[in-house]
Length: 306
Image 1 (cartoon, rainbow, N blue to C red):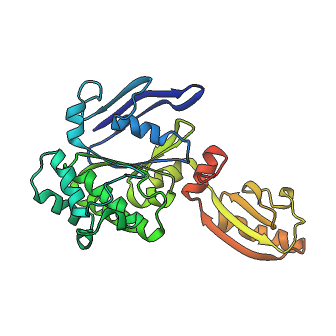
Image 2 (image 1 turned 90 degrees about the horizontal axis):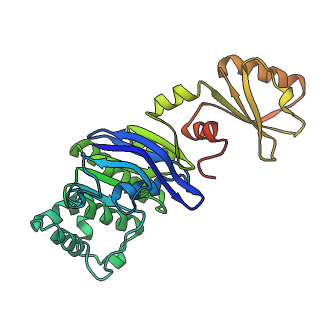
C-alpha cells in the first residue's frame, strides 16, 4: 500500500530524514516510534503531501503527490497532534462542514460521530470540548471520506491517561473492523505496543530496526534486567559476579544499580551471595525481561523520553 524508497529531507545541516526505506502492506497498522527530533513527523508530512523529499520516492497505492494529488486526497485521512476548528460550531456541524468538502451524503457525519463515540456531544460547541474530545473530533473528520490509508501524527500527545486510552480503544476497534492501512507516529512505547502489529524504530533521521515487539526484543536483546537499590553506596561494577553479566550500570545517585544479564535465574543467586559477603543489604529488587524502552537504550545509548 505504501512504499518509501531512499527518502532524504535535510534542513541545512540537519538530516531530518536520512535515506529511509520501508514498505507497509494493505491493512497493516504500523508505528513510527522515536523521540522528539527522530524525523517521524517530517517523514509523515511527506506521506501527507505537506512537504516533499529532497530525493527518493513515496507512493501510496502506486500514486505520488507530484503526479496524483487529487486521487491521494480522496483515499487518505489525516489526524494531527493538534487541529483547530471553528469554536462556535457544534460537533455535528463541524463534521457536516467537512463532509460537504467531499460532497458526501448528510448521514456520513452521523456515522463518523458514532465511530468516535461523541454522539452525546453532538450539540456541544467545539470550544467546550476537552482535549481528548477534540482529538476524537479530529479523528472523525479524518474518517469522513472512508480513507484507505489513515495517517496519525502523535494524536495522543498532551492528553491525560484516560483520554489517551479512550482514543486507543477507538483506533483498536477501527483496526479490527475496517481493514484500513494505518500509520501512527508516537514516542509512547505502550501506545505502539498496544495498537500496532509492526514497529519501526527511528532516531536522528534513520531507521534503527523494525518488526513486531517480540521480534525486536528477541533479535536485539537476549538479555534480562535486574534493578536493585542498596542501603549504602560502596559498590562498584567490579563487585558483581562476572559470569553471565553483560553490563552493570549505576542509576542516579541513590545507590541504585541496573544489571543486564544473560539469565536472571542463574545470575541472581550469585549476586545475592556476593552482596551478602560484602555486608550489603538490598532495599528493593526488581527482575524483568527487557522492554521496548530498554531496547531503545540498547540501540541508541539513551532513553526514548530524553
